[in-house]
Image: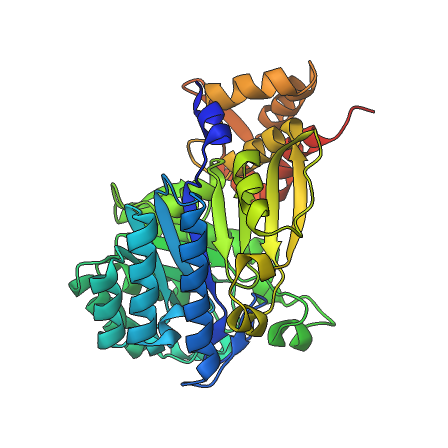
Length: 413
């Protein structure tokens, strides 16, 4: 059976995500499903215990069989404190037994006891939201930590033996080429094996979105974003990190396998308010047996995307899977192939022969070749060793490249 066929028949997901929607303060740019929550708020404890109960339930369904990676994200999971975060991580490690288990962390809440508890409970990896090593830029972003705190906490995480990644943000208020170069160099000096870099996106409903709702700031325009991403590439690759995805660089063997799962069609289960899942039909039917409100899939469905709509208070009050409400989207075989093609274009490895063969079996004759031909002719992609891979231009103009692939999902006119 092909790898895709095995995925389509697998009873358990390949990856698990738990969403912890609590933050000490909402950052100026953040539109994630997270809320400012006072330290010690009992909702955090009851919510994390509810996630543990849901883990027990889905493990009993067999949905965690074969799970390879897990990610405890947010929000700010480290805000839970040592006891609660340790208990949650231990439950994931015991029930899912992933070979990679990542916790997100913010420097200001990554205390020694939290760090020790996560490691002792089974975490293998830590992703730290540093964003910048310039105090003025951090203040503009609404971050609670300063540069000295970030440096000290990341060094402590590296010293703990965990595999450590840092997130950095470019094209932000007050940032210059020089300050960005300083942040990149400073991050590398901390001994991390993985760096993710993202241009700031100004979203509606955020503090920055409100501040700049009447104009597009020059410090965030497309040319600045492209320049800073190129600057990051030069610095990070010059230090020996290798780009494996549009925004991610890693030392050999230090890639984030959980994120790679998202981009390569691996099924995943998300628990917690706002968490998303991507399931095959067998997995969806297992879940729907416990949650009767889930609709019957149409006969054309090959893949199901779900998002938990239950609020954090509702999750805490009634942790049963049966009590959850979801938004659902059913994808046909053709839509699933188009999605896989689109997501593969985030990766340096691009689209391999297996996915291309599956696409040729699913997409009407001529459509795939026309899209691939246009991507190559416009310089968005190129052939390399039998694989269709994105070019630097394709990454900088990602929406155009991704759109070409996703358009293959549409019925022929």
